[in-house]
Length: 266
Image 1: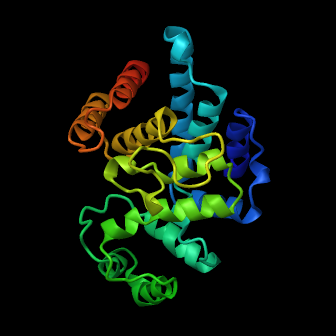
Image 2: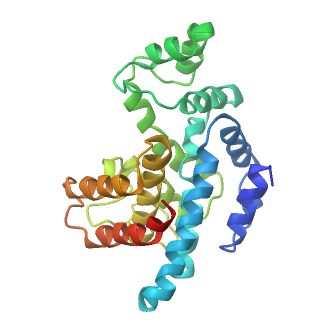
């Protein structure tokens, strides 16, 4: 299937979710993202790995198997996590395309350069126009690229919430960079309970942690060109160095599961 929306529909159906129940404009954003970046393909790969983790638990740890709710959260969380890479919820079609094209540029080494500098380097033919379009979205072209990239989690939260993504998935999708201390709207409290409508999903726990690890593992392997062993070592070091998560045994266990399940495919 060449249609990214149809492929996403099949992935959603596997966790009993009708993708066409979300707002049509959200699907349009997903299609736009697929046209300008590898983001949707990345999500498909992450979801395939997630199912391997689910099966591993069913076979090796049946007492700890992922529930139907957890599977839905992980699959849909992976699918919608980066929808914010199409820009703010109020961005028009041209604004969405601008932001999606910016996120489609990979291998940017200087994350402290300004957005204006980035646009001049990667879009020299019309950089000035792009700066104007960027600032028309209410954004500052003096932002560093790191600050710009970090905005997408909050945009994901707003888009998913307005776009009729299931409540139990919205916070999970928006907190996929919590390990990087990105907590949009402080929706995860100090007790790790969600401070927003989240359906049956009351807390940041195993499902959300798996989304984080799958997202980072995929980035390390594809964009970072790391081997499986180096990617797993990076994840272990990242958790070890985290002030909030360095004692989180669940994260460490999930990294071990990723290592076990994906090592043979490396």
